[in-house]
Amino acid sequence: MSEMDRACPRTGLAWDEKFMWHNTGKGGGLIEAGGWIEPYEHNEHPDAKRRIKNLMDASELTERLIPIKSRLATEEELCFYHTPEYVARVREGSKGVGGIAGPFAPYGTDSFEIACRSAGALLETVDHVLDGKVDNAYALLRPPGHHALPDMGLGGCIFNNIVIAAHYARHVRKVPRVAILDYDVHQGNGAQLAFYSDPSVLTISLHQRGWYTLGGEIAERGEGLGEGANINVPLPSGSGDGAYLAAFERVVLPALRRFKPDLILVAAGYDGAAFDLTSSMIISTDAFRKMAEMLVEVAAETCGGRMILEHEGGYNPWATPFSVLATVEALCGVNTGIEDPYMVLIKDSPDHQLLPHQDEVINQVQAAFDL
Ligand SMILES: [Zn+2]
Image (spheres, rainbow, N blue to C red):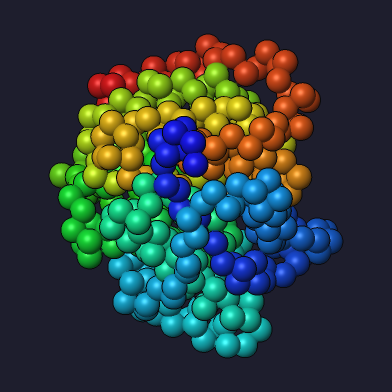
């Protein structure tokens, strides 16, 4: 092992083949098929995520990572956030052919166990990081979780993995301050709801403004003791590398430095990428890599590097694997030498510059939160 390798963080990878067996059935992309929509794939089908793992394996990046085995989250752990009635409904439905957990959140036979495994894998990852078995980690989870509400699933999400993990870190592992950053293109509504009045959990969401009508306006800034601890950055349609990197430099990093978390959890979504079907953003793989590098740096400064990225959206089976590969490379400090072959198509777009109407939104957030 070279000196350089020794200096690299020990990065964990949470993964379970069973995640891919969660069956969302046929759909119409993000919504249900029906009416004039001929049944096709549901967006949350396994291919994009399986191909991420395949690329990590083929590039030999996986073998540079420390495997973290999943476990089943208990019903008590699910009920840190969810109602017992909702948990029971999914449990019972999974014994049959499945059902609909909530709007645009179908599930199949055995999905309850798989969703418990997805949530439990993140809890196991929290333990690994807090116990020093790894320095940081990527949890390649499925089903995703960040939209799930206490009493229903939403947008492909069954149980809210990141909210349950933040609660676990705070109240079971007694971590004083947890920061949640969500860069999925859809707003991190679950974390905002769960910790809206909690000053010990900073929640930051970067998302496409008014997309899927999940809220996420600048004025939604927390309440009571949590006032000022919920930061929304609602970026305009068309935002790319310039807007996202500026939002990181001018909002995300200063907010994390000011908050001084003991653990950083990141809802890592890749559906703001240029080739994703579900948004109008144009983030490149280079920007995802830079965002991860900035997070590694701020985690080292504020909390000894203790950071977990957990996977949310990202639905392009061809392109998403390259963005995640770059992210994980940044986490572990390993360069596979693999370039994103899709970059050539977008790298010269002038819209990757920070444009004035995007700059204005970031200015407004900075002013609202004194950043
Ligand atoms: Zn999303």
